[in-house]
Image (cartoon, rainbow, N blue to C red; front, side, top):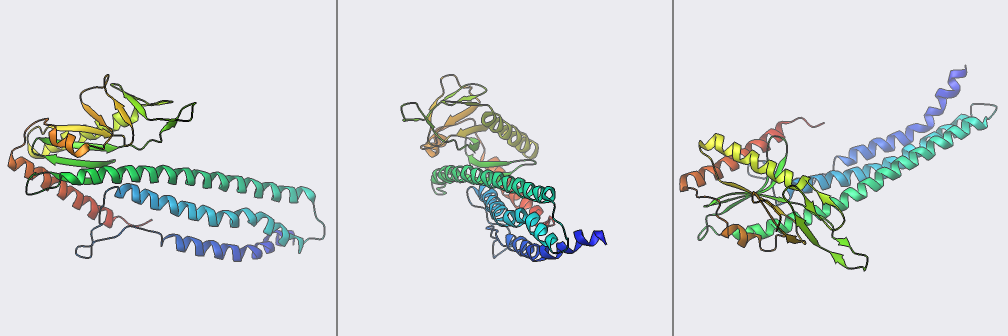
Length: 303
């Protein structure tokens, strides 16, 4: 039967399929998230969202680096198995096997390059987020200053990096990591010019960081107003660690800083005044939202 010539060589692919199954099973073990031993809620540290994304990126790199060679060699292994069941070899058939393996190698090579670049970006973002989080921790002195700092605050569709509650208002702090440019003379160019709708870096410009900061500020302002029954002063802050900031043409609604003196700057800013009752209610609402979102995440079935 002719169809057996194509079916029987699949036997040689079973060991490779078994190895692939083992790799997929081991992939699920790579999860750096930890839960509290007291209430089983996920423990959230500064940059936790980026940590989770970095874990996923390393998991993807592991998967592509192990499954890729197996899948790329599968056409050649199948072709060698075919040699045992046919009397005559056709060069066109072997050319197709070789072409398919080559395309698979190129595909997985591109995926590995993408994973590598993604991990580099996430590690840089995590380093900047941790630096900003460490700077914000200086605000937490309960005996002298009634400040409260939240990290990775979940909204309906995105995550706010940091939220700082002070007696004079609430601050939405977004962190963006950007690699400093290199000039033609080999020196680093680390100055960014802030305009109303864009950031002008040495060799490129961006609008999204300012847009996302305003979006987070607007969401938190509306959310707090709805639950507190009055308008709460909310100010957006965009942090670009390691950059020199020129704000001569910047708008007044978003504060763009480098972050090295962030705690002092936030302590000095006074966008409004909060009564003790509203101040405590905002902290309670944010704590409750973080708890509810964590429970919702736990109840979601794993895919």
